[in-house]
Length: 427
Image (cartoon, rainbow, N blue to C red):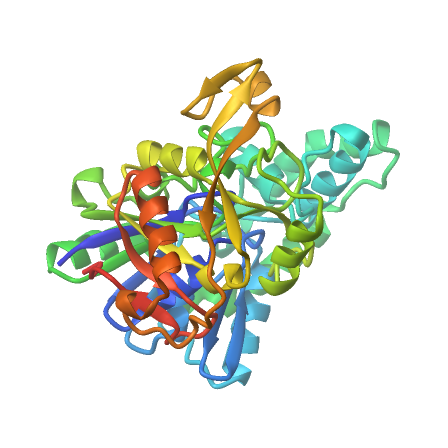
């Protein structure tokens, strides 16, 4: 049985939650391997809508074990709040597992995140202000606090004091802010220890054993390929690796154990936050995509920037992730357009460029080269097979598949769990 990676092939918000939930009934483990509560998933089950920020989408599937891997940064207050909210709605959260090696987001990470972003002014990155970047920075600087540290008070005190030595100097002297009390942070975080103790486990061992036993493990990325800290539109990126390689480091599973890598694509393109976006629309079409598609961030509440489908970044996602399949979402949103432009290449300084430029300067100056594909007006939300789609909708999907470099194995034709056309099995 396979181990699969499921990730965003654009700038995030592609509908990964629905794709993960669709597979949840056939999957034994769903693993978040990077990011924090800056990544939101919306999952619709029947008439119920669930907004998940930190928890893996598989938590909504009773037969599935959800896992937060070592590559995730965890805000314990957000975690417990999200668990409480699901429990109140009758969702069983008792099977959740959290890696003891996952790093914690603290109040001082959030403070540094917010004041730094404000200090940047027009040069701001567009972070969510939730402390994710500073938490990852502490991890790399080797002054981070891990989940397991909650269970050793002396270690926790030493680590919080060490982390605040420099941060308080910066907050007071550079940003004119009050110093943060190490004692208060330690007291608050010791209070979380018993609340999460039963969830903490050696998840790397559990996941490797599960794969060896033939169980199905799904690794779920947050954000998207173009927000990867190494392979995205740096510096307008997240602070971790949502790309497929991040699943190995963020969950402790070797690459030889991954069987399939599934990229989630919207039938158009969206982006939240600052940074280049070649196909972005500032006209009535952009507003229509935003309105019809309900393009508002699950976690941030910010309106998403909207544009036409970009085949250049889809090909790039196929390349850097080694994608074996695509899940195309929100095809229904495009119903009603007579012609649908698709970006097939860029013009940069008078040159036609077929692949994503490695130069940040070139990408900032990239202008989309469009091909128009015929649209459709028929309602597709009731389609159950590919043949049920209007001919022009079929043609649109086939064209995107050819341009993107990997087969489209599933198509979302509505927000509901059952509004999906399965072309090829992922399992």
